[in-house]
Image (cartoon, rainbow, N blue to C red):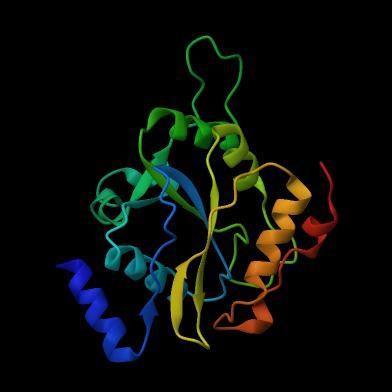
Length: 195
C-alpha cells in the first residue's frame, strides 16, 4: 500500500524513481547526497518504498526507546549500541559498531549521509568508506535531483583504492542538482587524498 501511495504521489507531482542497478547485493551502503533540505528525506524514503527496498539507517539506541520507537522503527531505524562487549578493553568506535551491524545481518542496506548537515559542508565524513571496506560491502550513490525531478541509486562501487573510489563518487554527485545548490559542494579534498 505504501509503495502504491508513494508511486501515485510521484506520478501526480511529475517525479520519477529510477530503477535500482541490476547488480543487487544483499548488503551495501547507500551514500545519500546532496543533502540540502528536509525534503531529501521524504523523496529518499518514498523511493525506497516504491521499489520495496528494506533500507535502514542508524540512530543512537536512546532514540529507539518508547515512544520514539513507534516512529523510528517503521521508518527503518536501527539502533547503534557502542557499549563494550565482554573482553573488549574500550568502547567501539562508530565505524566498528556499524561494521559489526553488517557482520550480524545476512541482509542489510544502510543509508548514510556523509555531509552530516543540510548546510554547506566542504568536508565530508568518510567513515562510510572505511565501514564498507572493513565489512566487505559495496557503496552505492543515492540521489535526489530536483532539476530533473528524478531519484535513484547509482552503480555499486567496490572499495579498492580510496583516491579513485572517492573521485568516482564526487564526480557522480557533481552531476546531481540539489534543492539548494548553494548549500552543496563535493568534498574536493577527498579527491586529492591518497591512502
